Image (cartoon, rainbow, N blue to C red; front, side, top):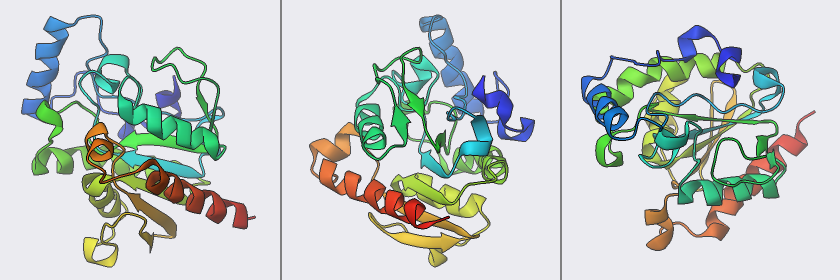
Length: 223
């Protein structure tokens, strides 16, 4: 439903064939788990749609048993537990997150998109797949009239967002807690909130929360 509030150019076809490897992987899982979503995962928008987005979170790609199963970004895996609890803490979400798309969770002032819309094998999209899917990310930015801040999760999400905005990576290198200005937007970068990063200590909850605290402060300073 929310995907319809974006231009067609921001939405891959339900059976998008552009990346043969990803299409084959989707088809494999459509056969194995026909009740799963198994398609390009739509952008998650807040109540009120594109007109109300001041913050866009850009992730990597759907997880196999997360968004690929449920059809909603960061829904069904650990990354969603940390992301949505943090968003609620700073007023970017409301309701109860129960790791399914029909729970009561709603976004406020925020949207969530992935750099790659289809699940990649082993959670590792290739360079050409990332490049192919960027054609759907650029129109998301241009469709959000109030967009001011962008949070990029992980280096791939960060680099793809910078390129989608017409910037150069050398202008805005990835670093956890880094803040850059590109195309009039404030870009806040964070390590991805994956279980691997939190289990290894690369990312702590405090580190992740600090990024969103900075975003909230930035938005509160604006008219």
